[in-house]
Amino acid sequence: MNTRSSSPASTTSFAALGVRAKLVEVLTANGITAPFPIQAATLPDTLAGRDVLARGKTGSGKTLAFSIPMVDRLAGGTCKPGRPAGLILAPTRELATQITATLEPMAVACGLKVTTIFGGVSQQRQSRALAAGVDIVVACPGRLEDLMRQRVVSLDAVQITVLDEADHMADLGFLPGVTRILNATQSTGQRLLFSATLDNGVDKLVKRFMRNPSSHSVDEVNSPVAAMTHHVFEVGGVDAKNALVRTLASGGGRRILFMRTKHQARKLAKQLTTAGIPATDLHGNLSQVARDRNLAAFTEGTARVLVATDIAARGVHVDDVELVVHVDPPAEHKAYLHRSGRTARAGSAGDVVTVVLPEQRRDVAGLLRKAGIQVSPQRVSADSPAVTELVGEIAPLVTPTLTPAPSNAGGQQRNRNGRGGAASGPRRGGRGAGGAGGRGAGAAVDRDSRPRSRNGRGGDAAGQGATGGRSAGRDGQGGGQSRSRGGHGSGASFGAATGGPSRGRTEHGAGTGGQSRNRNGRGNGGVRGADSAGHSQGRPTRSGSSHTRTFASRDQGAPTRTTSR
Image 1: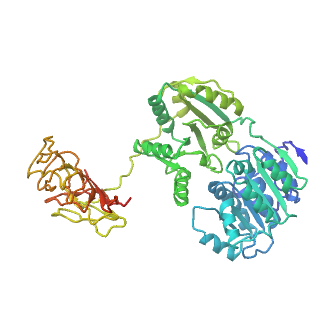
Image 2 (image 1 turned 180 degrees about the vertical axis):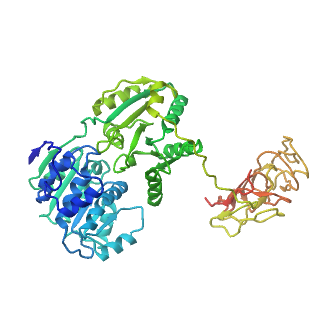
C-alpha cells in the first residue's frame, strides 16, 4: 500500500490534475475553482483507475473527490437496463441524497444518468429507473440488497465502486451486506474507499477487496479546523439549560441543535416554533417524505433552526450553518466531531457549543480530550455576555400558523373493527361505534356530565340540571360526580349535569359523561341534549364485550375515536 499525506499547493487547478473540460466548466459554474487538499491528493490516482483509500474528516471535500473521477471515467459509455456501471454506497438516506445532488450536474453534462436507491420509500420509482437504464447508482446497502434478490438490478457490470463513510457503515452494522455487494461487482473493477478511520472492520474490507491501493490521509478526523471555534457552556440546572438553548436558537443565522432522542428533538422543535423561532426536526421516526420536506425548509430558510438526532451528523450539508449546539452531549468523541462538522465546512467559519449540566462535566471533559479539543468551560446563563456575543443580533419572532379546528361538534370518529359510525352534534341515547368484539359504544356525550359506576348494571343517574356535588353512592343515586358500586342505576345523564369522570364496568348500559369506561358491557347509553362528542376507545375483554372510554372535549371540533385493542 502506497501512503501519501501531502497537501498540494493551492495553485493546483482541476484542469492541471487531468479533469476533463466539461467537468471543469460545471465546477466553475458552481463556484468551485480550485481543488481542496483531499481532491488534489487523490484525483491523479483515481483518474488513472487505481484503487484509492482516502482518510479525512467530515467537510473536507470527499464527495467531489470521488464524484469527479466516477463521472470522468464513465463518460461516453452506454447504460444497460438493470446493469449500472458505477456504484456509490452510503450509510444513510440523507448522505445518498447529498451525494446525488453533488454528482448529478456533472453526470448530466457528460450524458450520464444517476438514480438513488434507499429504503423508506416505494421501490417502484427505483425499479422503473433501473429498468430504463442508469449509469450510476447511489445506494444504501439494505434496499440495494433487496433489489438484487428480486433480480431488479445486477452489479456484474460495475466498473467503479465507491464506499463513502465506510466507518459509519461499520458502526451501523452494514459491513456483512457491503461484503455481499462487493462480491457481486467485477473483481477487476476500480474501488475507492473514503473513511474517517479504519476501525470496526473497515480494514478487513481494504485487505479483501482493494488491490494495492494508494492511501491518502488529508485532514484526518482528529485534526483541528482552524475556522471552527469550540465553546463549553456549563449551566446550573435544567431550567437554566432550557433558557440558554432558546437564546442560542434565537439568532439570525442557520443553526443545528443536536439531541440524543427522537422524542426530545421533536419536542424542542415544537417548543421553539411556538416561541416564535421557526424550527424543524430531523430524526429516524420521520418518513422519507417528511425528512426531505423538513430538510428543504431548513435549506431554503423557512426554518432557521434544525433540531436533529445523530441521523444528521453525517451527510447533511447545508451551506452557511453558523452554529452547532450539542444540547445533549454525544456518547462518544467521533459523534462529537461529525456533529460539529456541520459548520465550518469548505473553509467557512463556524461555532460549536456544548451545553453541560453539573452531572455531565466529567464525561464531557473525557469526550473532548479524545476528540483533541482544547477549550476552557464557562459558567453561563442565558443573558451572559459570552452568550450574547455569540448569538449576535436576535432575529424577529415569527408567529406560528395555527390550523383551525373543525366547527362541527363531535367531529370525526375513527372506528377500528367496529360496525358503527360516529355521532356528531346533539343526540338522544346514541348507539355510536362499537369496538372490537363489542356491540355498541356511546356516541355524543355531555361535556361536563361525569357519573361513575363500577360493577353495577348502570351508573348513578344525575338528574336534570345537576351541577357540582361530590356525592358517592353505593346502590343509590348520586349528584354531579357520583360513584356506584354494585348499584342498579340507569346510567343516563339527562341534562346539563356536571362533575368528574364516569366509569361503568360489567354493566349493560353505562352512564355516558365526560369520561366513560365500559368493560364487559354491551354498550353505552346516550345523553339527551349532548353538545360535543368525546374521544372513545373500544377494546374486547374476556367476555368479548367492549371497553369504551369517552373523553369530553373542550373544543367542539375534537374528534371522537373508537379503537380496538
